[in-house]
Image (cartoon, rainbow, N blue to C red; front, side):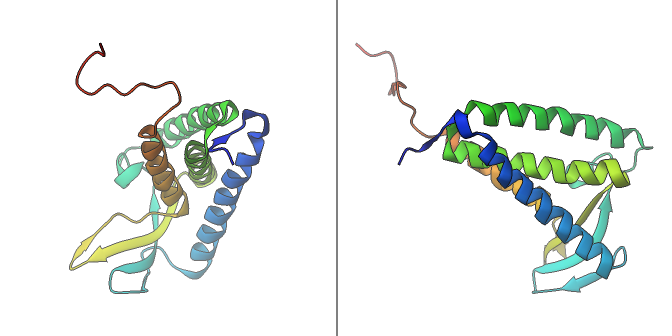
Length: 170
């Protein structure tokens, strides 16, 4: 079995993206239906569910601005999604394709929130001893795992790539 995904059936990878979007939107809808904004439900000593909204980007950067960020961040997500789809069409290693598909699904999930609500719904909260990571969602998780896969894929050996250990070969 080849470790490379064929560009001929690139659209199969879109189903992973669709699954991420579906899981993201369904989980957000569930939390919105069962929680009030700011309400928190401890699940473990380090993990809670909480309903939070983010009008900014990662770590709520830009959240205090006056509305411009909604459309700028949406436009960036549309351009990124088009680029990711183009990359999927090119094919590549399975790790690359998984990474691209996960990032695409996460980008579209958060884009949906941003366009329809003007903010992204977050509900997963990691915390410990008074410290907490900013709340996030399924889309954010998919983007993070996808980015990790792209980083791992960048370290793999590629056919035709020569390893140089300290200088030009003789």
